[in-house]
Length: 353
Image 1: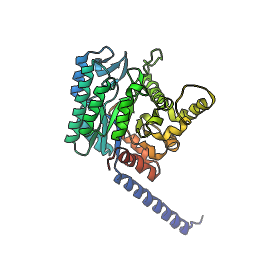
Image 2: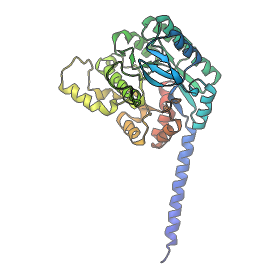
Image 3: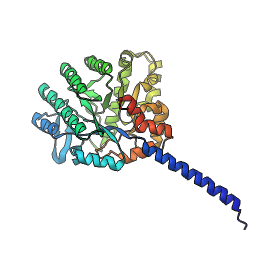
Image 4: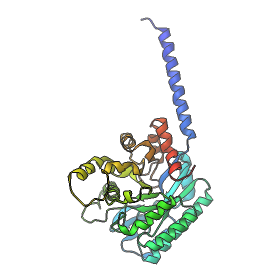
């Protein structure tokens, strides 16, 4: 057998070029900032407010289980209250900035006074964290959405204190976000150029069988995100407020994957829908996080809605959070898409440049 030395040299050269290219790509990715738009914290003040409210719809139960309307929506783990540990974990995962939000059930419990006080408390705690960990932490404001005047007052106070957006849930105690009573709040958010991070909660419907197997999270959360998106389109909110920036969690739930089905219903049935165009035309009016857990689904999302509408998120510090895994899937995308999702889109959306 004769060894073709020229072929070996050419092959080695090609491998060297490929390795050098991969090395440069890795180095370029490392130089691109990572901004986590979907990451949560609680605070000791918020926990105390929940316990004092003693609202039957929401309690912190044994083993720190978060019991909402009779079912668990997660468990409060030590990192959810430990800012130093958060920064350590961000460093280990190479995440530069966390945009912190309060998750379900936010401040939608207790009396009016309790809800308002809880919103002010958590917003002040997040502001304190931003000041302590300069450059690493920014935050979304929580508002007592169910009390319009109070929500507007807290929105303005939070904006003055440096909030980069607003966090709300996909429904407010069973009322969809497209309901008229929330329009003033959304109109003010649009006028302030404050994006709205919409985190799912369990659907406000009994009898769906979501209590077991974590179905409240896997099916309930993604279903409520899909319903929120559909209602904002079909109730005409996006036509009325085209400048309202809405960030839909978990890759938009199931909506990007059902959008064509919505188009068929819109074209071939008669209903009281108020949108002016087929539902798929509104896909790019939303923003999406990259929390979809596998490469194929992320690739589909990017192709469906555009790499310019997707942002890195981790869901840290919940048990299904995965800063490193999420970043690995983002980094597997082509460089332009990768860099936009790592931080470019977040810098543009939240004016963080």
